[in-house]
Image (cartoon, rainbow, N blue to C red; front, side, top):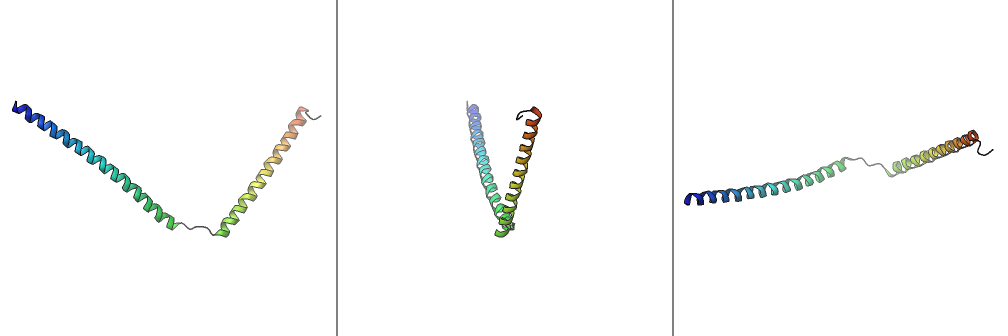
Length: 96
């Protein structure tokens, strides 16, 4: 009987050791995860310091260029649409 008791004690201690080991691994994984996030934010901050931000006048100029190009493109596409509509009506004899 003593031999069985010793074996049961060994199994119980091994089980508690494995539970502790699993918990330590979990804790380590959580710590690594948060350390990784902190590292990412530190690197992000250092990268933002390297960025050369455009001046206010450059931003305004580029915005105006984009708006003008959009308006010209919209007018061109609208004109093409109306032209093709007229051609289709002529071809199908719609307006007569």
